[in-house]
Length: 289
Ligand code: SF4
Image (cartoon, rainbow, N blue to C red; front, side, top):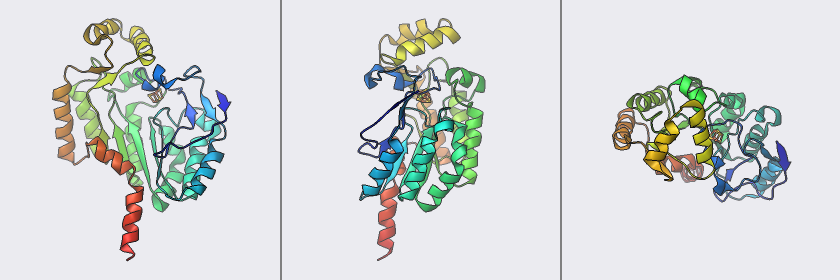
């Protein structure tokens, strides 16, 4: 890892990345794509050394409170988090200034922060987002080697359910020829139902590949699934979007199951839900009059 000083920490919509790069090694990772212009090896994590100080200052001076979001470009619970505790400190900082917090991860180390998540949930608001792509733990260990297998992630969702902390699942990507099966999609949605997941984000039954992540993905396919790279090349060429040949059937299945279990499946409504803090505040203010 290496340290840098950063000038800004929050995006216009309060998104935040404390780290750049990721150690989890998911074979399909889009954050590796060349368009993000990372000037260091992806596994050599860039740590924004002054991020917490900057966040503290930024939140103190913000007039409007809202949800702070992290985890879109790298997993906030990489192994270095256990030493640096920056994700943890950012949660403490949000809590201190009366902001809400939402975090996207694939790691059971989110439970290391259960205490602060509880406090956020009680005092402001928090939503945990978890990615589930593959119900087969053996396959999940190959395609997402740096994180706990899916069965453990489902246990984590159930622990959060017991704590009444709301959760959202990202069902993406769905890898053609590997995870694009009826059994897999049904298994994931059923597991979400049992774990009381509020919404599932699924943009389609496929994966996106572009310069940077395509090369890594193909190297991994060669290593673990001989012959599959050639199948991808024959089917998709250089396409950015690689949709499963079962896309339509699986999307129908996904929406039918979500409807059956009353799980939100509209991405726009789920993104609104993740930002809900301000609406909640307005509603609370209205009840005062
Ligand atoms: S956890 Fe996310 S950012 Fe990290 S390698 Fe996997 S997909 Fe990429």
